[in-house]
Image (cartoon, rainbow, N blue to C red; front, side, top):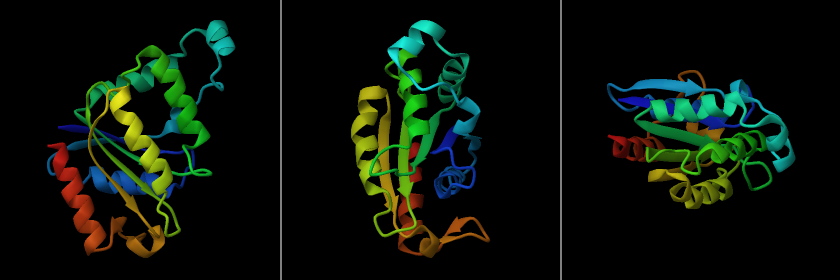
Amino acid sequence: MKIIAFGATSSRHSINKQLAAYAANLVAGAEVEMLDINDYEIPLFSEDKEKELGQPQLAKDFYAKLGSGDAIVISFAEHNGSYTAAYKNLFDWTSRLDRNIFQGKPMVLLATSPGPGGARNVLATAASAMPHFGGDLKGQLSLPSFYDNFDMETATVKAGEWDDKIKSLVANLK
């Protein structure tokens, strides 16, 4: 089994990238490929840009990467209650190739933030949208207070309720 995982943010030191990597690597025997959406940076989407550029190769490459996995794990950073601009732009370009950009893949969606909200607003938005874009949503989880619940030295969620919930969640990908 191959899992494609990424943090839906352009932050190079993202806590959401760390959470996505942790969760994806919990699936026993799975090969995990971590994507960095910075590798797919394309101009801001508009119909004018689309007419000018056509379909950017990087959007095609991202779509192909999503298709190369058996399952997908995404952890969403929240900017002002919504998607990050970097993720939304990549999503917009890629959805022009195929509205079903997640290609029927089973997915687990996560979100976290330093505060007690755990980026739950963006997670709710993403979870409600995924079925409309070819995502087979197997579960979602918002991890609040990241630095209280994640051990930075071992890159793991601290043992207890949250770790048990994440383990249970990713078990749904098999």
